[in-house]
Image (cartoon, rainbow over the protein chains, first blue to last red):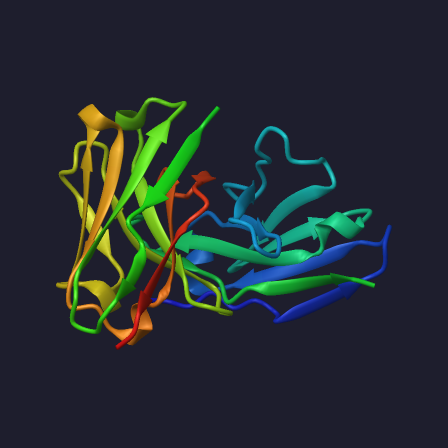
Length: 108
Length: 115
């Protein structure tokens, strides 16, 4: 198996930009996907295939990829963005998946 | 509107069994892989298993191989997770999700393994 590493926490002031990284060997060849989980709620997909945004997800959420790292960027952070964020990717066979370690975003 | 509703969770003793169900609606169930994900109390997400559209391929995280079985009934738009030989570290909220990359999620069902 493999691991996907995220920073445990990110703090940001309202209106500023939050960037969350996810690093792991498979990401150089496999897509990364991002999920938001607000307290007490089920996770929700916010970015898929590195950069794609599902319908209904605000434009302030964007994704990028470079080498073995994918990044979730939240521009103009709002209080409602305070949540845990997880990345997800697959191994080389694209059938086994692993979630990242998770990042708590705190809006100051 | 996509809906996924899990059921079957509860309190079970170590070594016991439990069968989780997930009722799907709002999308063409047999067009999609389906996935189970769990989250232990206060911990992160853990991918557990997935199953191909026709059930011909199933994959598991190492920690549940040989104990858990994922299955589906496309006629009933339902996904299942049979959990045997349950251990304390299986205690978690179990979510079903649509697609191999978990596009839509249910609200989860809590499984507690305790004497």
